[in-house]
Length: 271
Length: 296
Image (cartoon, rainbow over all chains, first blue to last red; front, side, top):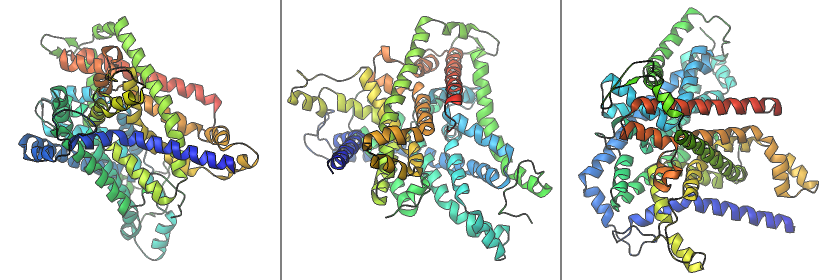
Protein backbone atom coordinates (compact mmCIF):
# COMPACT_ATOMS: atom_id res chain seq x y z
CA UNK A 1 0.00 0.00 0.00
CA UNK A 2 1.63 3.15 -1.24
CA UNK A 3 -0.57 5.53 0.76
CA UNK A 4 0.03 3.61 3.97
CA UNK A 5 3.80 3.78 3.56
CA UNK A 6 3.71 7.48 2.78
CA UNK A 7 1.56 8.28 5.80
CA UNK A 8 3.86 6.20 8.05
CA UNK A 9 6.85 8.15 6.73
CA UNK A 10 5.07 11.46 7.21
CA UNK A 11 4.06 10.51 10.74
CA UNK A 12 7.57 9.38 11.67
CA UNK A 13 9.08 12.53 10.17
CA UNK A 14 6.62 14.79 11.98
CA UNK A 15 7.24 13.07 15.33
CA UNK A 16 11.01 13.22 14.81
CA UNK A 17 10.80 16.97 14.12
CA UNK A 18 8.73 17.56 17.25
CA UNK A 19 11.14 15.45 19.31
CA UNK A 20 14.07 17.46 17.91
CA UNK A 21 12.29 20.72 18.75
CA UNK A 22 11.64 19.53 22.30
CA UNK A 23 15.20 18.28 22.72
CA UNK A 24 16.95 21.30 21.15
CA UNK A 25 17.22 23.60 24.21
CA UNK A 26 18.28 20.68 26.41
CA UNK A 27 21.05 19.75 23.99
CA UNK A 28 22.19 23.36 23.82
CA UNK A 29 22.39 23.77 27.59
CA UNK A 30 24.20 20.45 28.07
CA UNK A 31 26.61 21.33 25.25
CA UNK A 32 27.44 24.77 26.61
CA UNK A 33 27.98 23.39 30.13
CA UNK A 34 30.81 21.17 28.84
CA UNK A 35 32.29 23.95 26.72
CA UNK A 36 35.93 24.77 27.33
CA UNK A 37 35.74 28.48 26.48
CA UNK A 38 34.10 31.22 28.49
CA UNK A 39 32.22 32.40 25.43
CA UNK A 40 28.61 31.41 24.99
CA UNK A 41 28.80 29.31 21.86
CA UNK A 42 27.21 26.21 20.51
CA UNK A 43 28.27 23.62 19.37
CA UNK A 44 31.10 23.47 21.93
CA UNK A 45 34.64 23.83 20.61
CA UNK A 46 36.51 21.76 23.18
CA UNK A 47 35.10 19.67 26.01
CA UNK A 48 35.93 20.32 29.63
CA UNK A 49 34.55 19.67 33.09
CA UNK A 50 35.95 22.84 34.56
CA UNK A 51 32.60 24.64 34.96
CA UNK A 52 31.28 21.67 36.92
CA UNK A 53 34.25 21.94 39.29
CA UNK A 54 33.69 25.69 39.52
CA UNK A 55 29.98 25.19 40.27
CA UNK A 56 30.50 22.71 43.09
CA UNK A 57 33.34 24.76 44.56
CA UNK A 58 31.23 27.95 44.61
CA UNK A 59 29.53 28.42 47.98
CA UNK A 60 26.94 30.83 46.56
CA UNK A 61 25.75 28.39 43.87
CA UNK A 62 25.61 25.54 46.36
CA UNK A 63 23.61 27.71 48.76
CA UNK A 64 21.11 28.51 45.99
CA UNK A 65 20.78 24.84 45.13
CA UNK A 66 20.12 24.03 48.77
CA UNK A 67 17.58 26.88 49.09
CA UNK A 68 15.73 25.73 45.97
CA UNK A 69 15.63 22.10 47.06
CA UNK A 70 14.33 22.92 50.55
CA UNK A 71 11.63 25.23 49.18
CA UNK A 72 10.39 22.66 46.65
CA UNK A 73 10.42 19.67 49.01
CA UNK A 74 8.49 21.59 51.68
CA UNK A 75 6.05 23.11 49.18
CA UNK A 76 5.36 19.64 47.72
CA UNK A 77 4.61 18.08 51.11
CA UNK A 78 2.41 20.98 52.23
CA UNK A 79 0.44 21.07 48.97
CA UNK A 80 -0.19 17.31 49.02
CA UNK A 81 -1.03 17.33 52.73
CA UNK A 82 -3.67 20.02 52.12
CA UNK A 83 -4.98 18.41 48.92
CA UNK A 84 -5.37 14.90 50.34
CA UNK A 85 -8.19 15.63 52.84
CA UNK A 86 -9.96 17.80 50.24
CA UNK A 87 -9.87 15.12 47.53
CA UNK A 88 -10.82 12.42 50.07
CA UNK A 89 -13.79 14.41 51.37
CA UNK A 90 -15.02 14.99 47.80
CA UNK A 91 -14.77 11.28 46.96
CA UNK A 92 -15.95 9.74 50.22
CA UNK A 93 -18.55 12.23 51.47
CA UNK A 94 -19.39 14.12 48.26
CA UNK A 95 -18.95 17.17 50.46
CA UNK A 96 -19.95 20.53 49.00
CA UNK A 97 -17.49 22.37 51.24
CA UNK A 98 -14.66 20.18 49.96
CA UNK A 99 -15.75 20.80 46.36
CA UNK A 100 -15.68 24.53 47.01
CA UNK A 101 -12.16 24.28 48.43
CA UNK A 102 -11.04 22.23 45.42
CA UNK A 103 -12.52 24.90 43.15
CA UNK A 104 -10.68 27.71 44.92
CA UNK A 105 -7.42 25.74 44.65
CA UNK A 106 -7.76 25.09 40.92
CA UNK A 107 -8.95 28.62 40.22
CA UNK A 108 -5.85 30.06 41.85
CA UNK A 109 -3.65 27.84 39.70
CA UNK A 110 -5.22 29.34 36.58
CA UNK A 111 -4.35 32.93 37.49
CA UNK A 112 -1.33 34.33 35.62
CA UNK A 113 1.92 33.98 37.56
CA UNK A 114 2.49 37.73 37.60
CA UNK A 115 -0.91 38.32 39.21
CA UNK A 116 -0.36 35.77 41.98
CA UNK A 117 3.20 37.03 42.47
CA UNK A 118 1.88 40.57 42.97
CA UNK A 119 -0.87 39.31 45.25
CA UNK A 120 1.58 37.49 47.52
CA UNK A 121 4.07 40.33 47.46
CA UNK A 122 1.31 42.65 48.74
CA UNK A 123 0.11 40.06 51.26
CA UNK A 124 3.49 39.40 52.87
CA UNK A 125 4.13 43.14 52.89
CA UNK A 126 0.93 43.80 54.83
CA UNK A 127 1.62 40.90 57.20
CA UNK A 128 5.01 42.49 57.77
CA UNK A 129 6.90 39.30 57.06
CA UNK A 130 9.10 40.24 54.13
CA UNK A 131 11.87 38.43 52.31
CA UNK A 132 11.66 35.12 54.16
CA UNK A 133 12.09 31.67 52.70
CA UNK A 134 8.83 30.42 54.27
CA UNK A 135 6.93 33.04 52.24
CA UNK A 136 8.09 31.34 49.06
CA UNK A 137 7.29 27.86 50.43
CA UNK A 138 3.72 28.79 51.42
CA UNK A 139 3.07 30.82 48.26
CA UNK A 140 4.22 27.91 46.08
CA UNK A 141 2.17 25.41 48.09
CA UNK A 142 -1.03 27.45 47.58
CA UNK A 143 -0.46 28.27 43.92
CA UNK A 144 0.31 24.67 42.97
CA UNK A 145 -2.48 23.16 45.14
CA UNK A 146 -4.69 22.65 42.08
CA UNK A 147 -2.32 19.98 40.73
CA UNK A 148 -2.42 17.53 43.67
CA UNK A 149 -6.17 18.12 44.10
CA UNK A 150 -6.77 17.12 40.46
CA UNK A 151 -4.36 14.17 40.53
CA UNK A 152 -5.57 12.75 43.82
CA UNK A 153 -9.20 13.08 42.71
CA UNK A 154 -8.40 11.02 39.60
CA UNK A 155 -6.72 8.50 41.90
CA UNK A 156 -9.70 8.18 44.24
CA UNK A 157 -12.07 7.78 41.28
CA UNK A 158 -9.94 4.94 39.92
CA UNK A 159 -10.52 2.87 43.07
CA UNK A 160 -12.98 0.09 42.37
CA UNK A 161 -15.89 0.24 44.79
CA UNK A 162 -16.27 -3.49 44.20
CA UNK A 163 -12.87 -4.09 45.79
CA UNK A 164 -13.90 -2.26 48.94
CA UNK A 165 -17.16 -4.18 49.01
CA UNK A 166 -15.26 -7.45 48.66
CA UNK A 167 -12.95 -6.50 51.53
CA UNK A 168 -15.97 -5.66 53.66
CA UNK A 169 -17.75 -8.89 52.77
CA UNK A 170 -14.66 -10.68 53.99
CA UNK A 171 -15.13 -8.99 57.34
CA UNK A 172 -12.85 -5.98 57.01
CA UNK A 173 -13.91 -2.86 58.90
CA UNK A 174 -13.67 0.67 57.54
CA UNK A 175 -10.13 1.15 58.75
CA UNK A 176 -9.01 -2.21 57.43
CA UNK A 177 -10.64 -1.71 54.04
CA UNK A 178 -8.89 1.64 53.88
CA UNK A 179 -5.55 0.03 54.63
CA UNK A 180 -6.05 -2.86 52.21
CA UNK A 181 -7.60 -1.08 49.25
CA UNK A 182 -7.48 2.72 49.41
CA UNK A 183 -3.91 3.22 50.61
CA UNK A 184 -2.14 0.97 48.07
CA UNK A 185 -4.27 2.34 45.24
CA UNK A 186 -3.47 5.93 46.21
CA UNK A 187 0.27 5.61 46.83
CA UNK A 188 1.35 6.08 43.17
CA UNK A 189 -0.95 9.08 42.76
CA UNK A 190 0.41 10.69 45.93
CA UNK A 191 3.99 10.15 44.72
CA UNK A 192 3.09 11.55 41.31
CA UNK A 193 1.53 14.65 42.88
CA UNK A 194 4.58 15.15 45.12
CA UNK A 195 6.95 14.92 42.16
CA UNK A 196 4.86 17.32 40.09
CA UNK A 197 4.66 20.03 42.75
CA UNK A 198 8.33 19.54 43.61
CA UNK A 199 9.42 20.03 40.01
CA UNK A 200 7.16 23.01 39.30
CA UNK A 201 8.18 24.76 42.53
CA UNK A 202 11.84 24.08 41.79
CA UNK A 203 11.51 25.96 38.52
CA UNK A 204 9.23 28.79 39.52
CA UNK A 205 10.89 32.16 39.10
CA UNK A 206 8.48 35.09 39.23
CA UNK A 207 6.71 34.44 42.55
CA UNK A 208 9.97 33.57 44.32
CA UNK A 209 11.50 36.77 42.91
CA UNK A 210 8.64 39.13 43.76
CA UNK A 211 8.00 37.64 47.21
CA UNK A 212 11.54 37.30 48.52
CA UNK A 213 13.93 37.79 45.61
CA UNK A 214 16.12 40.31 47.40
CA UNK A 215 17.10 38.02 50.24
CA UNK A 216 16.29 34.47 49.13
CA UNK A 217 18.25 33.43 46.05
CA UNK A 218 16.72 30.33 44.53
CA UNK A 219 18.52 28.64 41.66
CA UNK A 220 16.26 30.14 38.94
CA UNK A 221 16.70 33.62 40.46
CA UNK A 222 20.47 33.21 40.57
CA UNK A 223 20.57 31.91 37.02
CA UNK A 224 18.44 34.81 35.80
CA UNK A 225 20.54 37.36 37.67
CA UNK A 226 23.74 36.01 36.19
CA UNK A 227 22.05 35.92 32.79
CA UNK A 228 21.23 39.62 33.03
CA UNK A 229 24.57 40.73 34.42
CA UNK A 230 26.59 38.87 31.83
CA UNK A 231 27.03 35.28 30.87
CA UNK A 232 28.95 32.80 33.02
CA UNK A 233 29.20 29.13 32.05
CA UNK A 234 28.59 27.87 35.60
CA UNK A 235 24.90 28.73 35.24
CA UNK A 236 24.61 26.05 32.57
CA UNK A 237 25.86 23.54 35.12
CA UNK A 238 23.02 24.65 37.39
CA UNK A 239 20.69 24.09 34.44
CA UNK A 240 22.02 20.60 33.76
CA UNK A 241 21.57 19.70 37.43
CA UNK A 242 17.95 20.84 37.16
CA UNK A 243 17.35 18.64 34.15
CA UNK A 244 18.98 15.66 35.82
CA UNK A 245 16.78 16.14 38.89
CA UNK A 246 13.57 16.35 36.87
CA UNK A 247 14.50 13.49 34.58
CA UNK A 248 15.38 11.15 37.46
CA UNK A 249 12.25 12.10 39.41
CA UNK A 250 9.96 11.25 36.48
CA UNK A 251 11.94 8.13 35.48
CA UNK A 252 11.59 6.89 39.04
CA UNK A 253 7.87 7.48 38.79
CA UNK A 254 7.75 5.51 35.51
CA UNK A 255 9.69 2.67 37.17
CA UNK A 256 7.45 2.34 40.24
CA UNK A 257 4.06 3.27 38.79
CA UNK A 258 2.02 2.80 35.65
CA UNK A 259 2.85 6.09 33.98
CA UNK A 260 0.27 5.98 31.16
CA UNK A 261 -2.43 5.31 33.76
CA UNK A 262 -1.15 8.05 36.08
CA UNK A 263 -1.29 10.46 33.15
CA UNK A 264 -4.96 9.63 32.66
CA UNK A 265 -5.07 6.64 30.30
CA UNK A 266 -7.90 4.32 31.30
CA UNK A 267 -7.65 1.61 28.69
CA UNK A 268 -5.05 -1.06 29.34
CA UNK A 269 -2.08 -1.10 26.98
CA UNK A 270 -0.43 -4.12 25.48
CA UNK A 271 3.33 -4.28 26.07
CA UNK B 1 -20.46 1.81 61.12
CA UNK B 2 -20.64 3.64 57.84
CA UNK B 3 -20.34 1.85 54.56
CA UNK B 4 -17.15 2.88 52.79
CA UNK B 5 -18.33 1.33 49.54
CA UNK B 6 -21.28 3.62 49.12
CA UNK B 7 -20.64 7.26 48.30
CA UNK B 8 -22.89 9.53 50.28
CA UNK B 9 -25.18 11.82 48.41
CA UNK B 10 -24.87 15.52 49.08
CA UNK B 11 -28.57 15.81 49.81
CA UNK B 12 -28.46 13.07 52.47
CA UNK B 13 -28.02 14.72 55.84
CA UNK B 14 -24.74 13.15 56.98
CA UNK B 15 -24.85 11.49 60.40
CA UNK B 16 -23.25 13.42 63.21
CA UNK B 17 -20.22 11.16 63.20
CA UNK B 18 -19.53 11.86 59.51
CA UNK B 19 -20.06 15.56 60.02
CA UNK B 20 -17.44 15.50 62.75
CA UNK B 21 -14.98 13.59 60.53
CA UNK B 22 -15.63 16.02 57.70
CA UNK B 23 -15.02 19.02 59.96
CA UNK B 24 -11.80 17.43 61.15
CA UNK B 25 -10.69 16.72 57.59
CA UNK B 26 -11.48 20.13 56.18
CA UNK B 27 -10.69 22.57 58.99
CA UNK B 28 -6.97 22.85 58.22
CA UNK B 29 -7.35 23.07 54.42
CA UNK B 30 -10.01 25.76 54.92
CA UNK B 31 -7.79 27.76 57.25
CA UNK B 32 -4.93 27.37 54.76
CA UNK B 33 -6.93 28.54 51.76
CA UNK B 34 -8.68 31.41 53.54
CA UNK B 35 -5.42 32.82 54.91
CA UNK B 36 -3.28 32.28 51.85
CA UNK B 37 -5.75 32.65 49.02
CA UNK B 38 -8.91 34.57 49.87
CA UNK B 39 -7.25 37.20 52.08
CA UNK B 40 -4.43 37.91 49.56
CA UNK B 41 -7.00 38.12 46.73
CA UNK B 42 -9.04 40.59 48.74
CA UNK B 43 -5.88 42.58 49.49
CA UNK B 44 -5.05 42.76 45.80
CA UNK B 45 -8.51 44.13 45.04
CA UNK B 46 -8.26 46.62 47.90
CA UNK B 47 -4.80 47.67 46.77
CA UNK B 48 -6.08 48.52 43.30
CA UNK B 49 -8.42 51.15 44.84
CA UNK B 50 -5.86 52.38 47.37
CA UNK B 51 -4.49 55.87 47.76
CA UNK B 52 -0.91 56.07 46.64
CA UNK B 53 1.46 57.84 49.02
CA UNK B 54 5.08 58.76 48.48
CA UNK B 55 7.98 56.34 48.32
CA UNK B 56 6.05 53.19 47.43
CA UNK B 57 3.67 53.59 50.40
CA UNK B 58 -0.10 53.33 50.10
CA UNK B 59 -3.11 53.69 52.33
CA UNK B 60 -6.51 52.02 51.98
CA UNK B 61 -8.96 54.09 50.00
CA UNK B 62 -11.60 53.98 47.34
CA UNK B 63 -9.93 55.79 44.45
CA UNK B 64 -10.28 55.17 40.76
CA UNK B 65 -6.98 56.92 39.99
CA UNK B 66 -5.28 53.68 39.06
CA UNK B 67 -8.11 52.49 36.83
CA UNK B 68 -8.17 55.84 35.07
CA UNK B 69 -4.51 55.33 34.25
CA UNK B 70 -5.37 52.07 32.50
CA UNK B 71 -7.42 53.88 29.86
CA UNK B 72 -4.35 55.19 28.09
CA UNK B 73 -3.68 54.06 24.50
CA UNK B 74 -0.32 52.70 25.68
CA UNK B 75 -1.79 50.24 28.19
CA UNK B 76 -4.63 49.25 25.89
CA UNK B 77 -2.15 48.53 23.12
CA UNK B 78 -0.09 46.32 25.43
CA UNK B 79 -3.22 44.48 26.59
CA UNK B 80 -4.36 43.91 23.02
CA UNK B 81 -0.90 42.68 22.06
CA UNK B 82 -0.79 40.28 25.03
CA UNK B 83 -4.09 38.70 24.06
CA UNK B 84 -3.23 38.36 20.38
CA UNK B 85 0.13 36.82 21.32
CA UNK B 86 -1.63 34.35 23.61
CA UNK B 87 -4.24 33.47 20.96
CA UNK B 88 -1.62 32.90 18.27
CA UNK B 89 0.39 30.71 20.64
CA UNK B 90 -2.78 28.76 21.45
CA UNK B 91 -3.62 28.07 17.79
CA UNK B 92 -0.07 27.00 16.88
CA UNK B 93 0.55 24.86 19.96
CA UNK B 94 -2.80 23.05 19.84
CA UNK B 95 -2.36 22.38 16.10
CA UNK B 96 1.03 20.81 16.90
CA UNK B 97 0.07 19.03 20.12
CA UNK B 98 -3.11 17.43 18.79
CA UNK B 99 -1.49 15.03 16.27
CA UNK B 100 1.47 14.40 18.61
CA UNK B 101 -0.82 13.37 21.48
CA UNK B 102 -2.86 11.22 19.10
CA UNK B 103 0.19 9.42 17.71
CA UNK B 104 1.67 8.88 21.20
CA UNK B 105 -1.56 7.33 22.45
CA UNK B 106 -1.32 4.82 19.55
CA UNK B 107 2.27 3.75 20.23
CA UNK B 108 3.55 0.62 21.95
CA UNK B 109 3.72 0.83 25.73
CA UNK B 110 7.49 1.30 25.96
CA UNK B 111 7.51 4.07 23.36
CA UNK B 112 4.63 5.79 25.15
CA UNK B 113 6.52 5.74 28.44
CA UNK B 114 9.65 7.12 26.76
CA UNK B 115 7.64 10.02 25.26
CA UNK B 116 5.86 10.69 28.55
CA UNK B 117 9.12 10.76 30.54
CA UNK B 118 10.68 13.04 27.93
CA UNK B 119 7.72 15.44 27.99
CA UNK B 120 7.56 15.46 31.78
CA UNK B 121 11.29 16.15 31.96
CA UNK B 122 11.00 19.26 29.82
CA UNK B 123 8.43 20.48 32.34
CA UNK B 124 11.21 20.24 34.88
CA UNK B 125 13.10 22.97 33.04
CA UNK B 126 12.68 26.43 34.41
CA UNK B 127 11.38 29.07 32.01
CA UNK B 128 14.60 30.90 32.85
CA UNK B 129 16.65 28.05 31.37
CA UNK B 130 14.50 27.60 28.30
CA UNK B 131 14.66 31.30 27.53
CA UNK B 132 18.40 31.18 28.03
CA UNK B 133 18.92 28.19 25.74
CA UNK B 134 16.83 29.86 23.04
CA UNK B 135 19.13 32.86 23.42
CA UNK B 136 22.14 30.61 22.81
CA UNK B 137 20.41 28.77 19.97
CA UNK B 138 19.34 31.96 18.18
CA UNK B 139 22.49 34.00 18.88
CA UNK B 140 24.77 35.10 16.07
CA UNK B 141 27.50 32.70 17.19
CA UNK B 142 25.05 29.81 17.68
CA UNK B 143 24.94 26.60 15.67
CA UNK B 144 21.64 27.42 14.00
CA UNK B 145 22.89 30.67 12.46
CA UNK B 146 26.12 28.98 11.35
CA UNK B 147 24.14 26.20 9.71
CA UNK B 148 21.82 28.67 7.97
CA UNK B 149 24.79 30.66 6.64
CA UNK B 150 26.51 27.47 5.45
CA UNK B 151 23.33 26.45 3.63
CA UNK B 152 23.11 29.87 2.04
CA UNK B 153 19.74 30.68 3.59
CA UNK B 154 21.28 33.59 5.48
CA UNK B 155 23.72 35.97 3.83
CA UNK B 156 25.74 36.89 6.91
CA UNK B 157 25.57 35.67 10.50
CA UNK B 158 23.37 37.84 12.70
CA UNK B 159 21.32 37.16 15.78
CA UNK B 160 17.78 35.78 15.27
CA UNK B 161 16.39 37.63 18.28
CA UNK B 162 14.97 39.89 19.71
CA UNK B 163 11.82 39.79 17.61
CA UNK B 164 8.24 38.56 17.57
CA UNK B 165 9.06 35.18 16.01
CA UNK B 166 11.59 34.34 18.74
CA UNK B 167 9.02 35.15 21.45
CA UNK B 168 6.42 33.06 19.63
CA UNK B 169 8.62 29.97 19.16
CA UNK B 170 9.74 30.03 22.78
CA UNK B 171 6.17 30.37 24.09
CA UNK B 172 5.03 27.46 21.91
CA UNK B 173 7.94 25.45 23.29
CA UNK B 174 6.94 26.27 26.87
CA UNK B 175 3.30 25.21 26.53
CA UNK B 176 3.71 22.28 24.12
CA UNK B 177 4.49 19.54 26.70
CA UNK B 178 1.62 20.71 28.92
CA UNK B 179 -0.84 20.60 26.04
CA UNK B 180 0.31 17.20 24.76
CA UNK B 181 -0.05 15.79 28.29
CA UNK B 182 -3.41 17.52 28.67
CA UNK B 183 -4.74 16.00 25.42
CA UNK B 184 -3.22 12.55 26.03
CA UNK B 185 -6.05 11.12 28.21
CA UNK B 186 -8.74 12.23 25.74
CA UNK B 187 -6.77 10.78 22.82
CA UNK B 188 -6.17 7.46 24.55
CA UNK B 189 -9.92 7.14 25.19
CA UNK B 190 -10.69 7.46 21.47
CA UNK B 191 -11.99 4.45 19.64
CA UNK B 192 -9.86 3.29 16.71
CA UNK B 193 -12.78 1.70 14.88
CA UNK B 194 -14.32 4.88 13.52
CA UNK B 195 -11.26 6.35 11.76
CA UNK B 196 -10.47 2.82 10.57
CA UNK B 197 -13.95 2.60 9.06
CA UNK B 198 -13.45 5.95 7.38
CA UNK B 199 -10.20 4.80 5.75
CA UNK B 200 -11.84 1.57 4.63
CA UNK B 201 -14.45 3.68 2.92
CA UNK B 202 -11.72 5.42 0.94
CA UNK B 203 -10.73 8.45 3.04
CA UNK B 204 -6.99 9.07 3.32
CA UNK B 205 -5.58 8.74 6.87
CA UNK B 206 -4.94 12.50 7.03
CA UNK B 207 -8.48 13.20 5.88
CA UNK B 208 -9.93 10.68 8.33
CA UNK B 209 -7.90 12.33 11.09
CA UNK B 210 -9.19 15.81 10.33
CA UNK B 211 -12.80 14.99 9.50
CA UNK B 212 -13.47 12.11 11.91
CA UNK B 213 -11.02 12.29 14.83
CA UNK B 214 -10.86 16.07 15.25
CA UNK B 215 -14.63 16.62 15.71
CA UNK B 216 -14.70 13.82 18.30
CA UNK B 217 -12.28 15.71 20.54
CA UNK B 218 -13.50 19.24 19.86
CA UNK B 219 -14.16 19.84 23.57
CA UNK B 220 -10.68 18.91 24.85
CA UNK B 221 -9.04 20.84 21.97
CA UNK B 222 -10.96 23.99 22.85
CA UNK B 223 -10.13 23.63 26.56
CA UNK B 224 -6.47 23.09 25.66
CA UNK B 225 -6.49 26.30 23.61
CA UNK B 226 -8.05 28.24 26.47
CA UNK B 227 -5.45 26.86 28.86
CA UNK B 228 -2.68 28.12 26.57
CA UNK B 229 -4.28 31.57 26.44
CA UNK B 230 -4.49 31.62 30.23
CA UNK B 231 -0.88 30.50 30.65
CA UNK B 232 0.64 32.86 28.09
CA UNK B 233 -1.40 36.04 28.45
CA UNK B 234 0.55 36.92 31.59
CA UNK B 235 3.90 35.77 30.18
CA UNK B 236 6.85 37.68 31.53
CA UNK B 237 10.32 36.22 31.03
CA UNK B 238 10.04 35.17 27.40
CA UNK B 239 8.95 38.53 25.93
CA UNK B 240 11.35 40.33 28.29
CA UNK B 241 14.41 38.44 27.09
CA UNK B 242 13.56 37.41 23.52
CA UNK B 243 11.41 40.39 22.51
CA UNK B 244 11.82 44.10 21.87
CA UNK B 245 9.88 46.63 23.95
CA UNK B 246 7.20 46.50 21.21
CA UNK B 247 6.65 42.88 22.24
CA UNK B 248 6.24 43.62 25.94
CA UNK B 249 3.20 42.06 27.57
CA UNK B 250 0.90 43.04 30.43
CA UNK B 251 2.99 40.72 32.61
CA UNK B 252 6.09 42.87 32.11
CA UNK B 253 4.14 46.10 32.59
CA UNK B 254 2.66 44.83 35.89
CA UNK B 255 6.00 43.62 37.17
CA UNK B 256 7.69 46.91 36.18
CA UNK B 257 5.02 48.96 37.95
CA UNK B 258 5.43 46.89 41.12
CA UNK B 259 9.17 46.29 41.22
CA UNK B 260 10.77 49.16 39.29
CA UNK B 261 8.40 52.10 39.78
CA UNK B 262 7.20 50.86 43.17
CA UNK B 263 3.62 51.77 42.23
CA UNK B 264 1.86 48.80 43.81
CA UNK B 265 -1.70 50.21 43.46
CA UNK B 266 -1.25 50.69 39.71
CA UNK B 267 0.21 47.18 39.35
CA UNK B 268 -2.78 45.82 41.29
CA UNK B 269 -5.26 47.65 39.04
CA UNK B 270 -3.48 46.29 35.95
CA UNK B 271 -3.61 42.78 37.42
CA UNK B 272 -7.32 43.09 38.19
CA UNK B 273 -7.93 44.36 34.66
CA UNK B 274 -5.97 41.43 33.18
CA UNK B 275 -7.92 38.85 35.18
CA UNK B 276 -11.25 40.53 34.31
CA UNK B 277 -10.37 40.45 30.61
CA UNK B 278 -9.46 36.76 30.92
CA UNK B 279 -12.72 36.02 32.71
CA UNK B 280 -14.59 37.94 30.00
CA UNK B 281 -12.91 35.88 27.30
CA UNK B 282 -13.77 32.63 29.09
CA UNK B 283 -17.38 33.74 29.43
CA UNK B 284 -17.53 34.64 25.75
CA UNK B 285 -16.18 31.25 24.69
CA UNK B 286 -18.68 29.52 26.99
CA UNK B 287 -21.51 31.51 25.46
CA UNK B 288 -20.41 30.81 21.89
CA UNK B 289 -19.91 27.07 22.39
CA UNK B 290 -23.10 26.56 24.39
CA UNK B 291 -25.39 26.33 21.37
CA UNK B 292 -22.90 24.75 18.99
CA UNK B 293 -21.55 21.62 20.60
CA UNK B 294 -23.38 19.56 23.17
CA UNK B 295 -20.25 17.38 23.52
CA UNK B 296 -18.17 20.02 25.22
